[in-house]
Length: 323
Image (tube, rainbow, N blue to C red; front, side):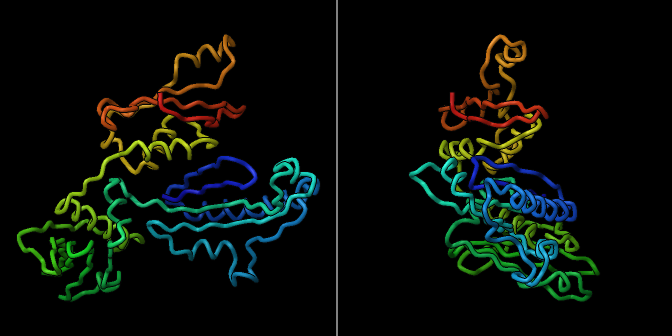
């Protein structure tokens, strides 16, 4: 799943656009937006004085289109296309006041690829300082005919798991073993034959599968914390959504949990919204949300999200807070 996040140092908030697995449509959109932004900055000389830095073929030895296509997206690695520009002194003073004179601004077109990291425990595991993963074979080696076996290893200190790809009677068998102090424990293993080596993301999928096995063998104490939600509340302000279901999906994804992890999580319209539509009151629209009883040790389970509605029926988030 590819996402494009657009944000500017000149303004608060950001826009997040999903592109499913359609890399070509994403490339076309980013290249078009990059060119449109440059034309806009060049034509608005009352606000913008000079473009200081853009994606230039002479600088990078390849076009923006080719660079995106060749970028090695990782589980935690995104591509950030930046446009630096200077404000005119008058507009800079209007934007930043006398106290902050900083005419250099930047627009970010950040391209992310989200892998199916559905369990928060996987993120907690991968971000441990002692975490180590290595795959000792390539796609071609995995698909090659013959009886060779291949290995991938995941370690956290002196514990971990090991993936063995074996071939018998023209069939492949993937087995993940529990490992401690670099020794496999034979009676602690699980069969994992679901890796599709024709999938471009097969190695990331294998690493995630091994993380899941690791968590089965060595459960981590990892629970949702109030600080996690507070950070998501801060990030969502300024973002635009077309549907409430998109807001739910975004919050769950940024908390790195699934609906199965939070079965009672729900966001719905507040009763006050009908009064706003009828002109009886003049406040921001409100969504009522809850994480469900018992979540966060029964503290702060309910929250509110306020938003403005644009002429194109987009919801611009203005606030998110606990009730």
